Amino acid sequence: MSLFDKFQPLIDIRAELEQAGVMPFGAVTEKILSPTEAIVDGQRVILAGTNNYLGLTFEPECLEAAQRALAEQGTGTTGSRMANGTFAGHLALEQELAAFFGKQHCIVFSTGYAATMGLASTLAGPGDVIVLDADSHASLYDGVRLSGAEIVRFRHNDAADLDKRLRRLGERSANTLIIVEGIYSMLGDQAPLADIVEVKKRRGGLLLVDEAHSLGMLGEHGRGVAEAAGVEDEVDFIVGTFSKSLGAIGGYCVSDHAELEAIRFAIRSYIFTASPSPSVIASTRVALRLMQERPQLRRRLWDNAQRLYDGLKSLGFKVSPQVSPVVAVTIEDRDWAIACWSRLLQRGAYVNLVMPPASPTTDSLLRCSVSAAHTPAQIDRILEAFASLGAGDKQAVK
Amino acid sequence: MPDYDEFLERTFKILKPFTKPGVMLNKDSELVTELGLTSLQVMELIEQLEDHFDMSIPLNILPDIRTVHDLATQLDKLER
Image (cartoon, rainbow over all chains, first blue to last red; front, side, top):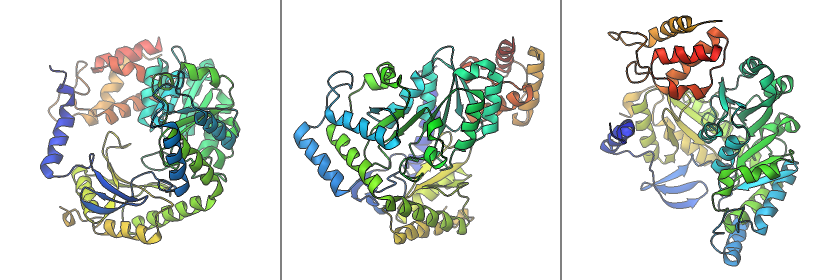
């Protein structure tokens, strides 16, 4: 037995892909041309797998703020938030996020992963219980495993199953941390948050919602699924990221629980890492403001999502259960999915290839994410690339 | 309250459709290395046991489970 034995399945898949001349998990963006176009692996493509939902990555105001911060404050903070790494900009962003969500407290993290993993690993501990949606993101699973708490999964998006799990816990349910996401990253489906909140009210516990893929997309003000469902007051902790709709990198948690200010000093992913660079904080602050000033971005995003979803459906592809900025095409056969991914790239569309165990079932996914910056013509070009696959005809690609 | 034997029997029943022809199912059968269950299939097995016995099985017990016997033993412990 060698330390490397457990990696054999990965080594085999990598060798197989290399032999086929396809590297879907290491595609290189050689030149980024705009929020929606790039040269990837030598092909000029429309980007349909970037999570750049509002298309703000090249927004002049964001670029200008970032460049100014870079010149004035340097390339990095070189330290933890708890030591020398809290600059005025970090505090200002925390206040602006708290105000945007209408919450009293906010913590800014260096990445979205650090935010979700940090909260999930810290809020509950040995002797407590965490009940989480089965399709939760890896950062949440990593966090709960570190927590030392008892971990129970409930069936994806099934509030009745959550209720059953909390019932079985009896009195312990009052001290349980419930974890769900707003929009799920792989299939783009939304949590039935009003139903989940009903269960929480009946059985007790605290509720954490990861709005990584729903910030800026749902609700009248873009605050996410909790706003859209009208249950923001019942959500104890909202976590999210700057690396999707806000076009940068970083993460946050907002809450009305005053304890959050002390809890921040117990979160290891907050303490033992350097804080976000000043330029990242500067562009994020502008993007947060622009997101609020430009509700038309949200409308354009959903128009694009609808256009892609309807188009893929009419081409005969098996798409996600509901329209969302994440549109996933399910492909049962793994080799066929790899071939499709490669053909899409050649035909000018970059999407994400997702294979088990990253996909929620044994199927593979061609995961598309749309942007407000896509034009209808670009969405049509993505559809043309998909049409070239022939939905039911494997031989067309092989 | 179900006991070790009941957990064992139900696990055999659930595993039967997953078992490849020619593979003998017994309490020492290893779920992943011998029966070839994927991580998704292990979770499906857990969900079916949870439904049948109206219990929640914490993920924390999974690292201690290699064989059918290990699973039945852990479930028996949970119910005590």
